[in-house]
Length: 314
Image (cartoon, rainbow, N blue to C red; front, side):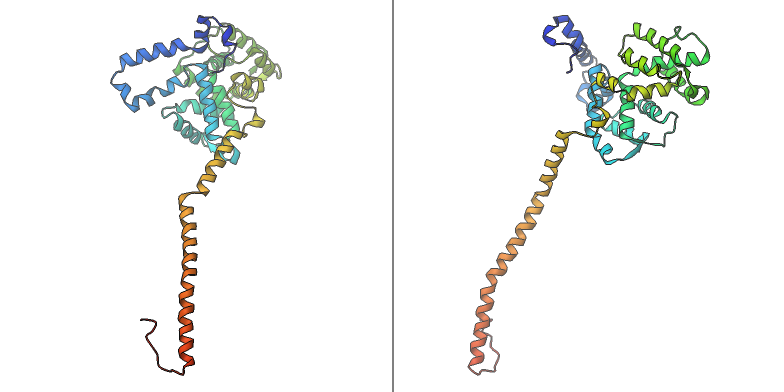
């Protein structure tokens, strides 16, 4: 587990807070007592898997890293996939992974709701990282953005619900003004105010200022895409390498080479090669018999005999 500070310098309480150990212990006991019979069923594990992969920042980071490790080859091959295909890949790791999360990540790349459009692996995974790791932050920023578009005071409502977030996402795609953007300086001030009282993870305010000070206006998805491309934000999360190293994984490449070598030296190939050697040896052993029979025929012919014999059968 990645620690923000040296674990040996932490007090007992600080260590428990940093590692979220108490949460896991409390939840394990609670789940065991409430679901004694269900805990023995595999379906129950799948049911709660999507909860645990994002219940702590460490779990979110680990899930993003696992997704990259498992499907990096897609990017290496240069394949372009649709949103539904990326959703299927994520559900291979977590069967009940929400499709809405993948749709929101795709919107960052595609800017609109073009579900059938194709995306590169690198574009998708960095956008997915922002949407998944900073989910609560993204939802709250969406509320601020919509308030600024409608002329409301963005500091009045900062706590979104699942229903309101879906409505906001639809509105951002339907209203033409949503793509034109809002004033970057005002947007930056509102986000800074959010971060001062925010209880969940959020990108560094240095990175946020750097992005918003680079232009006078910014759109919601333009801001998220800038976060996805920001190397400092990516390093703070710690789940993915920099974009230049995204498709490089020496350990995985060595493992693939080892597996390929095992397939090349499979029992089937050994059997075929041994059978070929056996056939050659049999042909070598049979050759003296042929030469002996051939010599007998020559001797009989030299005696002047013209009758056919059954000596070969005898």
